[in-house]
Amino acid sequence: MQSITILDGGMGRELERRGAPFKQPEWSALAMMEAPDTVKEVHKAFIAAGSRVITTNSYALVPFHIGEEVFQQRVTELVIESARVAREAAEEANQDVKVAGSLAPLFGSYRADLYEADRAEQIARPIIEALAPRVDLWLNETQSLLAETLQIKALVDEIDGQHKPYWVSFTLEDAEVTDQPRLRSGETVKEAVAAMAKAGVNGILFNCCQPEIIADAIQISKDVLSKINDQIQLGAYANAFPPQPKNATANDGLDELRKDLSPDSYLVWAQRWKEQGATLIGGCCGIGPEHIKALSEHL
Image (cartoon, rainbow, N blue to C red; front, side):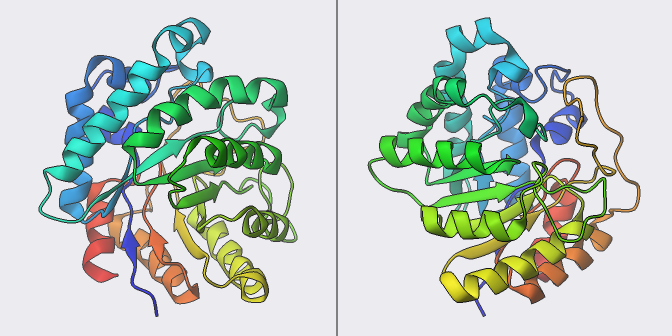
């Protein structure tokens, strides 16, 4: 059995907990603009808890969160800063810690319906170009739609001459029970896994959805990959939100967190993912250093 790599947890809620400037629509990007030292503190807290892969705080550095004007003026500067503080936190650790470059949904989390193919490259290219020389691997996260995922992967293949490891993480429909796990676009996990294997990714994960729905997705992914490419790693990092509807409005305010996902209860789900073959395990929104510490100590 492969060893488990412990990822980090949710950046935004931990920034808020530490008193960093934090509001919508900027969300975690506001701390990148006004309190980068606090971002570094959060990275270090996750490392101290056991994370061996931390993710750049570049998720919200898209027009959807920071607006068109700020994006045009500051995107490269802010993305480089997100990589700088992550790299410093990793290098100051007494452990081998990798930095993953976060590539987020370009038009808003959960909103496959807002995807604009003709604008995607304009947004993604400066982010990828700024991260490429500064990260150890790529994490294209919270993806809802295969078309956007494949477009971002093609851009990274073009820009990243070093061909760093590439992980893609899908968010799953969790507000409605369906016959099988699906992306928020309605595309099936089977379709997504087959497409990603063909695209040449190194890892397939599921994030920013409830832990209950992820277990089935991992099992399906393992079954599909056993026939295609069993060298692709599987992983998961769930959130602590209640189920999110298809028309979720990520910029309207902060979602309430579930009360039942304590570190111990989250660990139960992580152990199940591990038993199913997941080797990349962490947390998303609302999953803090205390959860990551439980994962690190027991997995």
